[in-house]
Figure (cartoon, rainbow, N blue to C red):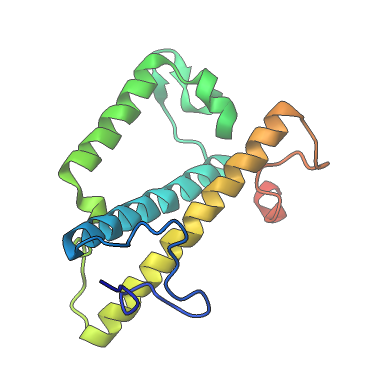
Length: 167
């Protein structure tokens, strides 16, 4: 079955499946792949926001007894600084979201729109999710490289393209 006319197939790329994952699969499997793409795109959008917000704002309070949110460094450096209770909270929340699955549902929060406008917005959401997945990879790459070799690029801030954040 050909999926050349599915939502998300846009020029100039067209139908992009370099690993051939959609060859010889049924519609139900393709729908599962699309749901996974949508969910991963939404999580990546949240991740990008989660990378940017701590650069300009810190939540008050503690992630665990005696450890304030403000004491946790930004980005990859936070991995070793977050206590076990903090990791437990995050894993529990992620598991709950994944179990109830509302991040992979096109119907969640769907406004009452004309069918053409709804299709346009679904396509935009897929595009934004794809872009966010690439953005997360670049944020992680840049942050990890700065962690291993501080100042490798001569810049001391994570979000280097938005200098006004640090004024």
